Length: 290
Image (cartoon, rainbow, N blue to C red; front, side, top):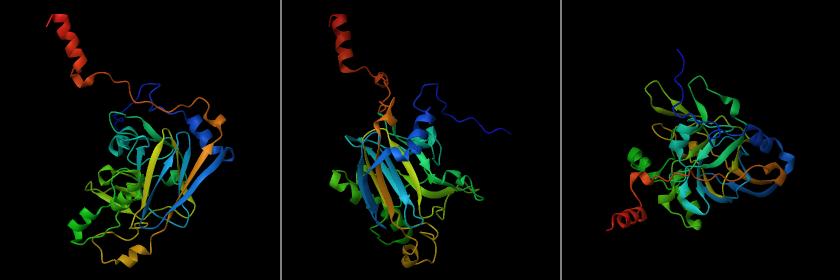
């Protein structure tokens, strides 16, 4: 039996149709890029940083396996932010090379495009698990309290909240994430599961910034998820032993590599959702003599 066709299929020329040659050139020409910033996200904490349009960011497991919860906003307008569910529909539930991370309405444009992924060939494992997950979202202290009755201040939601505060954002700006390096799937009961992170020291995911970005990433307090966060007899010391920092590197490609590229713009939708704008109402009244 043939697989059903994907629901979202673009016409030629749509932003869904990437130019593989361009992004492969960005990925492969590592000798034609300049390192402009390097930082480290400590275990059980988060960091936020800026990425100019046309730059490449590398998220890397420098010391060992670790899951990261990743948020993105338009640097100049944080109302435009990463839309995980639409990205899941337009691309797939687990993303890799040439997939794009899309922004919320009414902007709906690519914020970043994945150019390189050392876990690209992980594929589907024996349990149906895949990496770089859009099925789930960040861990948070509210769910933790529901499940355990305890307070814990270093879940990814809280980490991200602290990280973006210096940029004028709040808890209300934290949104559904891309779970970088996380291996997940759905079991036979259609329930979400998480597996141990398959990344090793030196693995990375690279993204090309399509617009000016503010990014934030949390090192999950569950580390590499080889120990269950909930429902097990594991102690916090057991979880802590699985935690590693995550590295962030920002590169500026040579200008010649960017020839022919320009930042994407929002869709030119002018329908006003079927409601006439005030100026249209006024024009109609003038035509009718009112």
